[in-house]
Amino acid sequence: FEIIIFNKEEQEEENMATSKEFRVVGKDMVDYICDYVDTIEQRPPLAQVEPGYLQKLIPHEAPQKAESWEEIKKDIERVIMPGVTHWHSPHFHAYFPTGNSFPSILGDMLSDAISCIGFSWIASPACTELETVVMDWLGKMIKLPESFLAGEKGLGGGVIQGSASESTVVALLAAKMRVIRRHQETNPNLDQFDILPKLVAYTSDQSHSSVERASLIASVRMRQLATDDKHSLRGDTLLEAMKQDRARGLIPTFVSHTPLHSPLPFHCCRLTAPSCKDEDIWLHVDAAYAGSAFICPEYRSLLNGVEFASSFNFNPHKFMRVNFDLSAMWVKDKRDIVGAFHVDPVYLQHEHQGLVEDYRHWQIPLGRRFRSLKLWFVLRMFGVEKLQEHIRHQVKLAREFKALVMSDSRFTVEAEVILGLVCFRLKGTNQRNKDLLDRINKTGKIHMIGTQLKGRYILRFAVCAATTESRHVMYAWQVIKHCANDLLSDVDEFKEASLTNGENGTAEACISPD
Ligand code: PLP
Image (cartoon, rainbow, N blue to C red; front, side, top):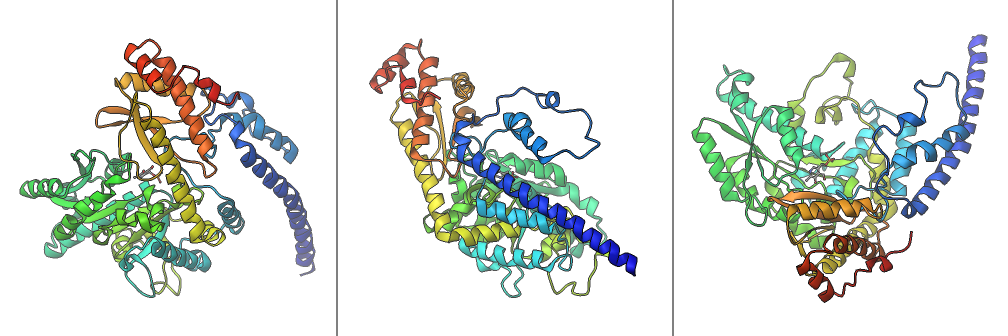
């Protein structure tokens, strides 16, 4: 017994020494983070390194003896930062935004300290219960129909997944099992592997690639349907495809068709949702980026039709100040999702089973982090109003950029600008636009990406960092114009246009000299 006491004190002393050190280096890290955030604008937004750069900077073996924090800290700037693409630079305009905020970082710090693996209620009741409550808060913020909420004892409910892609896979797997079970009810001799080859999922030719990947992962054949001139999948196109497939003995199972380039076709959730309801098909609405905007009443109508969906998700880690990874997913009938992945080994069982959520049944991995903490902190430390302000500000900046593009007759805007993304291109060939993007990124001043929209190569300008202001939008436009001037300097029609647009080829003068 005495020996145990002796060891306990020694252990406590050692623990205190460790936490004493953490109090110092932890605060030092917080200072580094604040300095990084405050000066991020001075760094090139896109990493300026070649593949394999890092291997040359660090040893080939892990250290045998502990190294000091001072030594490690020096390597943040020497080894890591040169290879970082700074997604939170106000000069970063690629992809979509990814959330970041101090309240969210605080939540993650606490989650890392608690470091529980919340696969079941008993594995950490707070981890499960906070998730259920904040997912209902979030659902109410975007006016999701009540049937999606957990409420007191509803069939619906929300779960935090790591990504929108994961949510789509989970929805497709649940839809697949729902259809297989229904067929087995009417025909008990059918094996699920007899039914599986007949299942068909539908998406559109403009959908995000995550839907196609979900079909590969779930082994469900997928048809890519054509969209209309507004990049929307229309209800009649979907109905016709389902009719054809039924005639071939196939079983329509699942629909998900959120486009990548514009949140506009969210209207098409309204176009296809009633057909999915009539045909009793699982519609999964993936509003990865656009979903956060639905906390603003003026954008909520984009989600009309969701009442007919079986599942819905969006990424607060994109547009709502929550750090990656936090994808919010809701289902109308949790029995579909829980039933699809149900295995129940003795070592994971507990006495309250069946009365409480065990979120391991709602997801692919067993383990799960305490992610609801960062969402809870964000919602409380900003409040809904500040989050709405953030969304409106980002949208306003995108409209400013759109106006700049439209003021220059050499460019066209290629899709309606509804939220924070502007799709545009230089008049002329795809190659000309690829060359323009290449020049823009080579300046190291801003970072953008391009993509194909119905065979046309376009440039995407997204308002990303929360610190982006009008001056950054103007700066980006000056960089783009300057690169376009260079590129078009020997194309006669554009020389003329650039004069009409007030261009004199000295756009560099408008760009700060850094
Ligand atoms: N779905 C849509 C509509 C998206 O726009 C994106 C990314 O931008 C994704 C899915 C992929 O998101 P995640 O990285 O969360 O899987």
